[in-house]
Length: 411
Image: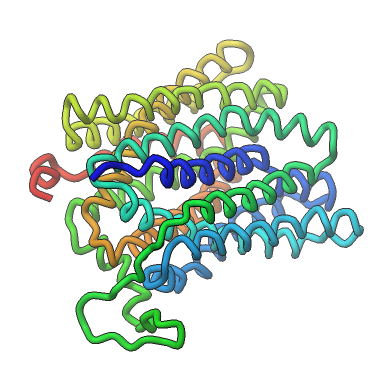
């Protein structure tokens, strides 16, 4: 069995167009809240944290719901839901009816739909691509994401300057419409999912009815496997601590250290080129050293860089330091992420993939929201530099949560 290049090409195209749309719309909602709605710091923080947390809670029943349905229609539906939700923002802006509550509701809908889409697409990828090619596919997705991160925000900033504050939201909305068309064009006659185990009751559509236990099955599947359990805990903590320090770096660099916005953007956008390098290296490194060694090495190395951000100083040396630290972090993450994604799919039964991925995404979103709020309080007490340093020091301990070598060998 070999990869179906046409079908995977359409799937990849859909991922690419939505990734570039997301890159263009990066930071659009906080910007609209500040420039259009004149919201204060508390409201802007609430918009970011609540969108992730509430969206994750809303998505809890979506994992098992996605599991027992054909994945391609679910992906199309989630793209269309995000299109409708996001396009309502520029429409309301033109009509003079845009409010903070609408931004909050749209952010919740988009977050929940993203979790459901990712769960469906991961399960779909496992069915579409043979196991030997999963790392190749995941590496291509990873490199696409980082290239969108390099190109999208600068173009988005230019678009906002020329066309106004909601221009990038409209572009992001259209990207989901185009993604839905790409996924629809795959044209694969996907078999209906079958639940294994206990007898199944079906609804009118023929899909198995959800049971109460299905809501927690994703977490059970992760926690039952020692290796996957340790990778899960490690990953959500690393992502949460990295993201918790991000707004504090903006406060530190744009405020106390006096960097211009373009300097701040350059310092964090330029290192994303390391994501392209890391994603392209992942397959070669695994082929040479093995999945186990690369996953453990990259997983440990990615935790060593962020503590350096606590030592940033004004001027060119400060920008160089941030670029070097971020380049190392992004490169290691770009190696680790596709290897982890492939390991998760390889070690999860086909009829549990959507629930596992949904549980993983929900936990990540909740952890990021909680740690971002907690680190905001810590920064208010100790200052942003001390809070960034605390996140970096804690990250240095996270490699201890990675699975031991013998566990990975037998997992």
